[in-house]
Image (tube, rainbow, N blue to C red; front, side):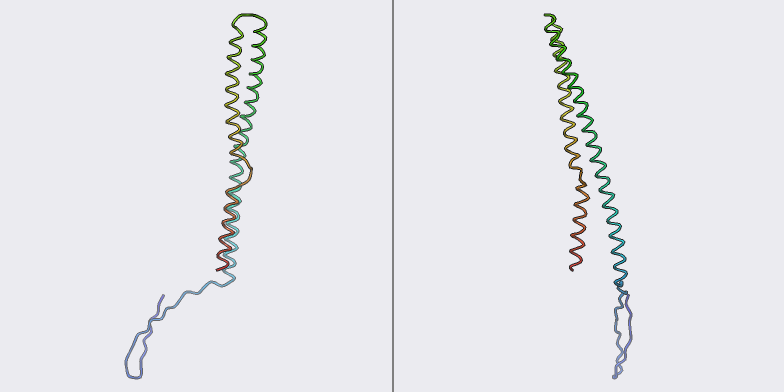
Length: 150
C-alpha cells in the first residue's frame, strides 16, 4: 500500500513524494498464539503418524507370527509322515514307504517356505518403534530451533 503526498517548496516548485505505508506487524502475543496453535497441530499430526506406523508394523508381526505357526504345524505333520514312512519301511518291503518320504519332503519344503516368509514379515515389522514419526519430530525440533536462533 502506498500513499502519494504533494509538497510545495519556497521557490514555488511542486513535487510529489511517495511514502510507503507498511502493514502492522503482529504482536508478540499473536506470534506466541500462532506458535502454540502450530505446535499443537504438529504434535497431533506426529501422533497420528506414529499410530498409523505402529498399526502397520503390528499387522506385519501378526502375519509373520501366523505364518511361522503354520510352518510349525506343517513341520509337525512332516515329522509324522517321516515316522509313518519309517514304519512302512520296517513293516514291508513294498514301495509304499517311498511315497511316504516323498510326501514328507514336500511338506518340509512348504514349511520351509512359510518359515522364510514369516521371518521376513517379522523382520519388516520390528523393531516396534514409530521410526518415521520420530524422524519427523526430530526434524521439526531442528527447524524450530534453527528459526528461534535467527
